Length: 63
Image 1: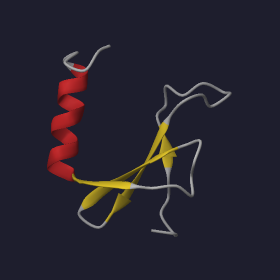
Image 2: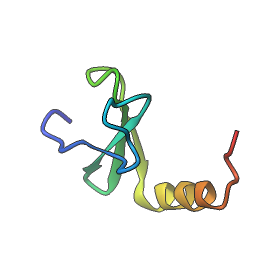
Image 3: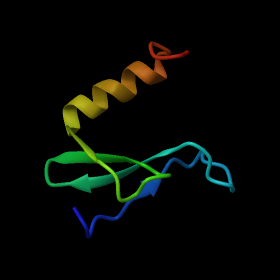
Image 4: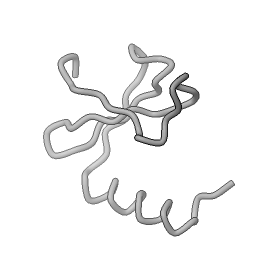
């Protein structure tokens, strides 16, 4: 996972803030905490990630 191209949301402000970063990883999406780039990473199947995004867009995970 060392040579992945990590990206942040386009909604991330100029000062960074509390964000997650994503990278393409085989048939999955890799996710990490932008404040701890050397910390743990989560991998999730693309179809499952798409389902999470769909739920977020519908407001199912609003706090």
